[in-house]
Image 1 (spheres, rainbow, N blue to C red):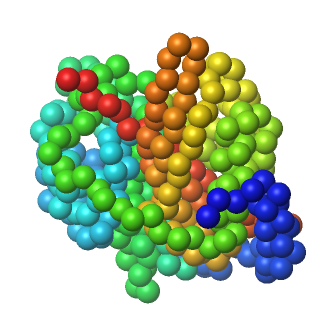
Image 2: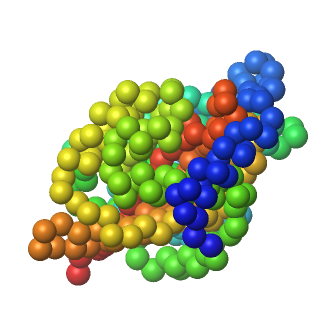
Length: 306
C-alpha cells in the first residue's frame, strides 16, 4: 500500500506521542569489554584467513543463514554461497598487508553492531581502503555469530570486476512486511530522496549519526551529512522512481535494525539508468520518541562489463 505524504506525517505524529521513552541497551560494562575482546580476536582470525587463503578458518563465525553485502556485488545469502565468494576472492588476492580496526561497538540484548575500517595491500601494490558494518547474533553465553556482514570502500575502485564472483546462486527474496511505524518513515525518506533537499535528507538521521556511503569516507554528525547531501545532490539528476524492500529486521531495545535492498531509476539530460544495492540501518528512537537512522551502510551493485 502506498502512503501519501500527509498520511506519513499523521502516522509519525501518532507514534511519536504513543511510544515509550528512549532506552539505551542495558548491558554491563564488563560484558562490553568481553565482547570487544572477542571481536578483536575474530578480526585477527579474519586477517589470517585472508592471508592464508582459507575460509575454513573463519567458517564457524557465520550463521547458516548469514547475509553478505559486499560492495559492487549482488547480495549473497547463506554460508555455502559466502564460502564460494571468499574462496574465489582469497584465490585472486595475495595480501602483502591487511589490517582491521574496530571503531565502534553497540551492544544490545541479542545483537551487536560492529563498525570498523580496513586496509588491504596486495602483492601487486594495489591498495583497498574500506569500512564495514557487521551485525552479530549474541547468545546467552555471550558467543557471537555473524547474521549480516556489509563492507564498502573509502574511495572509487578502478576495476570493480575484480571484486565480482560469477556463478553464485542468485538470491530470491520475498519482501517481508515491517511495522507501520517503519513503513511510514521509509515512505518519508523516499520522498526526501526524490525531492533532493539536503536538509530534509539529513533530518532522517540522529544528531550524532554515522553513515557509511558508497565509495566515500564515513560521514558523522548531521552537519556533515548536510554537506554530504549538498555535494551529492548538486548534479542534475532526476530520480524517476524508487523501490525499496526489507529482507529482514530485528527489534532491539531502542529501535530496529533493518536489512534492505533498493532499486532506483534515474535520468539526466539525454541519458538514463538505474542503480541497485543493499544496506543495513540501525534506527534509534530519539528524545521525542520518533525514529531516526543512527548507523547506516549502503552498497551498490556493479554491472559487470562483458
